[in-house]
Image (cartoon, rainbow, N blue to C red):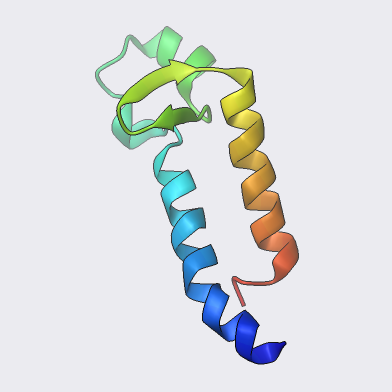
Length: 76
């Protein structure tokens, strides 16, 4: 079981990093109007690098994935 965990850990870390890259943050929203950016975008997730729509299901999937990542202990 430990050998499998060691083998899958890099994939889990890469997946978590990718999901975090889909989150709107200060650095990637500066071109939006300030009020809209702060009240709507910051913290939201989009579905892919080419789809910038904010959807509740996208945020739910991303947060669920990040929580599973943390629960797995793969960050240790």
